[in-house]
Amino acid sequence: MGIDPVLFSIQLSAFYPDKQYGGDRIYRDMLEQAVLADQLGFDAVSLTEHHLINILMMPAPLQFALLIAGKTHHLKIMTSVLVLPIHDMRVFAGELVATDIFTEGRMLFGVGRGAFGFEMGRLGVPLDTSREKFDESLDLLMALLTEEEVSWNGRYYRFDPLTIMPRPVYQPHQRLMMGVMAPEAIYHCTKRGFHIQTTPLSASEQQMHTQVDAFRRGKAELGHQGDHLSLSLSRVAYLARDAADQKEKIKLAHHYYGMFDNVFTGDGIVKNGMIKAVPRKMTIRETAENLTICPPAEMIDKLGIYAEAGVDRFIMNLNFGAGQSETLDSIQHFAEDIMPHFSRIPETAQMRQSETARGRHGFSQSQLPG
Image (tube, rainbow, N blue to C red; front, side, top):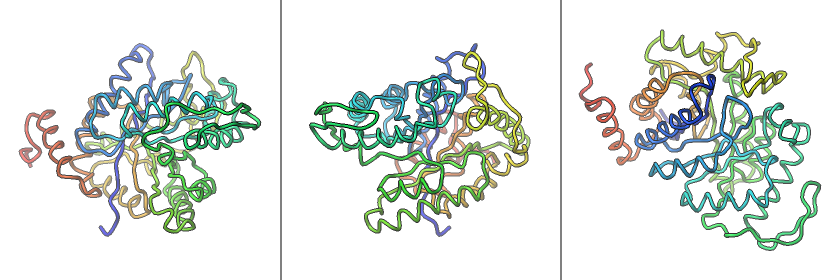
C-alpha cells in the first residue's frame, strides 16, 4: 500500500448502562478483552480515567493496569488519559513510578486536563481552571520524575525540597503522551517533545486530517529530535459481520454518543451516576459515515485513510453497547482479517493468533469454510 505499518490497540472503556450487570462483570469483560488482545498480537490496550459517571468508567486505571499486566505477556498498557488536575503530583508521581516498575516498563502514560464539566466540577477542579492547574501539574510531574530534591513555589503547589522514592527505573517521563484534541494544542505539545494521543470523537474525517497535520507540523519543527514521537488516535470502531450487524451497531453507537455529548458539550445531566442520553445534533447517517463500524472490506478502506494520513497507532473503542461475546468475536476477526493489511505482525504474534483461533473456534483459520 506504500504506507508505514500501523499499530493497533483496544480501548478498554467501561460502558455501564445497567447497574444490575455489576461493576465486577464489567471489569471482568474488559480483562478478558485485554487477554485476547495480548494473544492476538495487538500492540496495546488503553485505559481511561473517569469518575462518577457510567461511560468510560474507570476510577482506578493504575490499579487495573497492574491486573492486566499480571494476566498478559506482551501488551503495552496505555492510559487515555490520567487526569492530572485531580491528583496531588507528590503522591501521583510515586504511584506512576511504582506502576511502571511493577509492569516492567510496559506502561505508556497518557495524561490530560479532563474533559467533562460535570465530573471535573464535582471533583473541585472546574474546566475553566483545569488548564492552568494541568500546566503546572505537568511541569511539576516532569521535575519529580527527572530530578531530586525538588522544591516548588507555584499557584497550586508550594513545598520545600523533596525526592520521589523509589527513583524511576524505566524512564517513564520519556513515555508521557499528551491527550489533546485541539489542533493548535497538538502542535505545541508535539513541539515540546511529547507523544500525542488524540481523537476526532464522532467528527468527520477532515477533523482527523487537521489533527494529524498539526502533529506533523510540530514534529517537523523538531527535526531529528522528533523522529521518535508517535501519534495515537482513538475512534469508535467495530468489525461488523454484515450490513445488518453494521446497522445495529451504528444505532448503539449513536445512542452512546447521546450520553457522551451530554457530559462533553451539553448540560451534564447525571442522576445516581447515570448519564441521560440527549438528542444528537449529528444525524445517525453522519455517525455512520464518521465512525469505523463496518464489514471487513469497508474497514480496510476506512483504515487505509488513517494509515495514509500518518496515524502511528489506531486505538479501537469497541465498548459502546455491544455484548461481550460479539465484542470478542470482533476483536478476533479484526486481528485475523484486518491487521495483516496494515501491520508487520511478528511471527510470534501470528502463531498466537493461530492458537487463539483454534481455541475459540475449534479449528484453525485455514480450515474455515470458503
